[in-house]
Image (cartoon, rainbow, N blue to C red; front, top):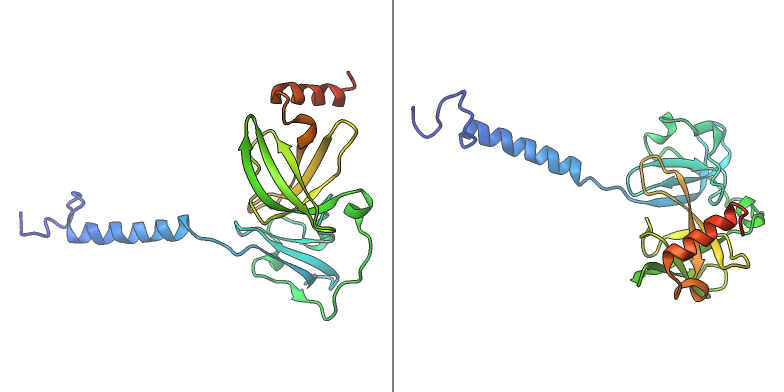
Length: 211
């Protein structure tokens, strides 16, 4: 064995040549595995195709989308609503010269309200989400069946309560595809003391028209 460097084709993992290769692969892996993106919204962007005022959104995972409205049903701008629009490869949205005209949009007329996530915690069988209404600052607690896929400080939309204390929240998934997600929620005061399985079954039966 010719010295400390071993043979040129040695695969022991301790050779100078092999160590350099492993170090390079490890650096490439770490750079890929832990790459992060800034999540933000530009509310006064211009579509690079037609020049219309749009909302530009980037998710924490790098997904980038142009929306006509930033709320349910989350309508994507048709000019760039394709799997890999060239305009989205960079931040690609020009900033409008003036703020967009204030008008009522679909999510407002459909009864949705933006809320900010204050706290998420587990209580008995339920995940409790404490939110603050953006419009007036009032707070309330929502019950979720599973741990929510969003975090503190995120803005989501709440659809209000029906007579049974059932509601729905809508938000954008933290993924590259940036899909809209709707999740069932339950009013804290009405259901926190009830078994979760019983509440879920009653809601399912009501949705099917059996109650």
